[in-house]
Image (cartoon, rainbow, N blue to C red; front, side, top):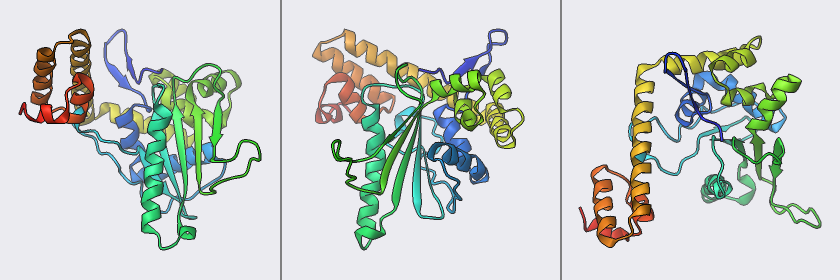
Length: 281
């Protein structure tokens, strides 16, 4: 797992890396940064593309972590009507692949409903940029829906790419492999970011955008609010785990409601039903 926040040991100042969820969305969903997105797609999919539609901003920066829903990170479409969903994952857990698959399957189903015939459907490519994968996980995996024995493809318009960011960063350091530098830059701290981006105009632009966001008082303020909200949520979860009585669960649920937390999240943490939680309002 990669820490998306670097803290200067001297000044104690925080530096948010490019792979930080909110920073990533802010930079790569900006239509002025199409060239950065096109480089990401070129490196991961192995072909040059021209984005013809502005990135679809699926999730704007929000001051409360509790407002977050199941959303895509960045979704764009190229001149061949191929849609690319780019997911940045700075931690790995057992059900992460299911979570990411649910996003692209949701878009696939939506497109199926919108088209007149099946042959008019878009091609969907999901690009997972993930940190925290196991050491034996390869630098890249390509997933398709195919038969294991005959290798017969079941559908031809859905592909998932998974990139191991930690391994790519190691490759860039040891082999100076230029192709992967924009991916490795996503998990670099301030000094390493400058070192890996130097000499490449596109990468230097990425560095400039990351530095700009870190200097943006509004962004930094919102990030501080999110970090506090995460800390509160972890505290409440910890309390819920250590206290099993019904009354304690009710007290915790009331506390969460006062903090405007999502009812589904409260139900998962406390074990109370949604109806029981609603009755506490």
